[in-house]
Length: 246
Image (spheres, rainbow, N blue to C red):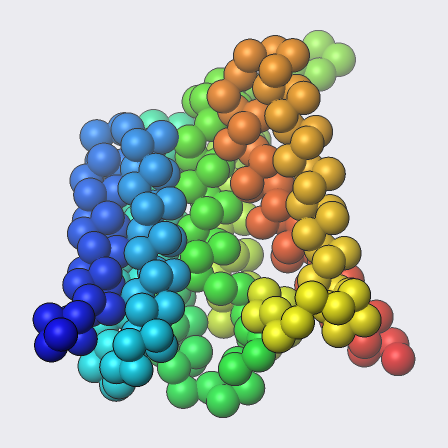
């Protein structure tokens, strides 16, 4: 049926609409719901490519639409979530985090023309960056409250998040090789690095679920995803250092 040829682009539009909804929810302070719409965007982003390949209708228009939708859902959305999250805490300094949307656009443009990224990534993928910040901003605001250690009040966590947002902008466009999850088979020998990473993710998720059940806090569930993204970055940096030494 001819109508099926438009299914991939329709799914891409759904991804974009999820991003638009997430941005609006972020401006209303509804970070958890914004994060859920972002997650829905991740699913649509996966299935639009899957549908295009299955239907044999991949083309340049679909590629361009996909990048435009991704910059809304995985570039502007986390930037707006973090901006709205930090503005009550650090004032207009939080406008710095909007650079994330621009760097995400550069990352997506590089991906479209970089032939090296067929089997792996160069730089942090935009969905991974978006999920990290979506998880952070969806946690209770108490995380950014001043902490007293040894009688000394520490009120630097919001500024630390601001600094980390700049670091994430760099990671989006840097030349750091990043692991992809394109399994051609399930053999350990051919996918050892992927399996080691997934085992680490499983440990993080189990730990967070145990903590969440013990303390009854949603934040631990949300941190499991954020922790896995952090582990993803650290794991790739470690692999790069090992390969460079060899």
